[in-house]
Length: 294
Image (tube, rainbow, N blue to C red; front, side):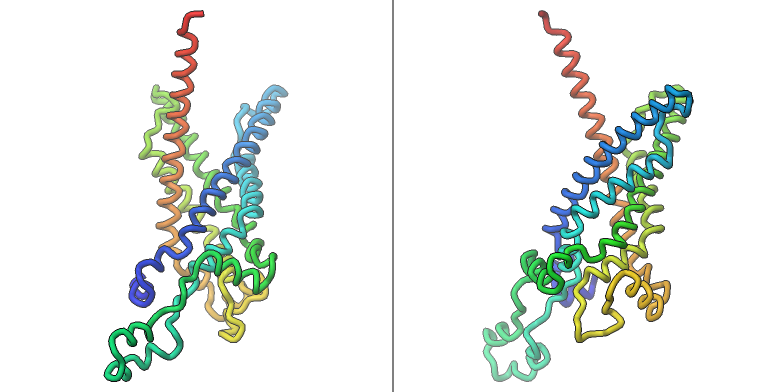
C-alpha cells in the first residue's frame, strides 16, 4: 500500500471502483435471484419427500451446497466480463512520460518550473472505456471471459460460505429454541460473526483459484517476462508451481481475508435486518387492513 501511494497516489487504491460497484450490484442481484429460485425448488422437493415419509421437510446440507453452486455458475457466466474489466483496472500501473523522470534533476537548472511540471506529467487516466478497448483489442469478445474456468470452480466459495452460514445459523436457532427463546431471536452482531466465520473458511479453501484467475485476467505484456505469460488455466498453475512454488498461490491472502470477511459479515447482517424489517412492515400492513371496517 505504501509503495502504491508513494508512486501512484491515493487514488490508485480505488482503481476500478466504478466497475467494481456495478459488478457487485449485478453479481449480488443475479446470485440472490437465482439462489432464491433454486432454494424454493429445493424446499418444495424436501416437503414432497416428507409427505412420502422421507426426511423432516428441511433442506439438507448437500442440497444447500447444490443450490449455491448452481446460483454461482449462472452468476459467473453472466457477470465475468465486468470482473475482467475490474481486474485489468486494478492491476494497471501508472507510468510517467518515457525517460523524463530520470532526467528531471539534471534539467531543473535549465527549465522553468512550468516546464518541469509538464515533463513529469502522466499519461491520460486509465478509465473503464480504456480497459474495455484494451481487452477487446487483445482477444476480441472472448477476452471478456478470460479466467472463467477457475472462476466457475470458485463457485464453491459462496457454496461453502452459504453452507457454513446456514448450518451455523440453524444450530444457533436450535439452541435458542431449546433455551425457550424464539427462533428468530438472533442479534445483528451474531449474524455479523456467523457471516464472517463462514466467509473465512470459504476464502482459505478457494484462494489459490482466485490468484490463478487474477493472473489470467491481468494484462500480459508479450515482450515481458515469459514466466508471467499464460496460455490458459493449466499453464498458469504449472508455471506458478515451477517458478514461485505453492506460496505463490497464497500471495495477498491476508488482505483478501480482511476484505472478504468484513464484506460478507456486513452483507449478512444487513440482509437479515432488511428481511426482519420487511416482514414486520408486511405484518403491520396486514393487521391494519384487517382492522379496517368493511
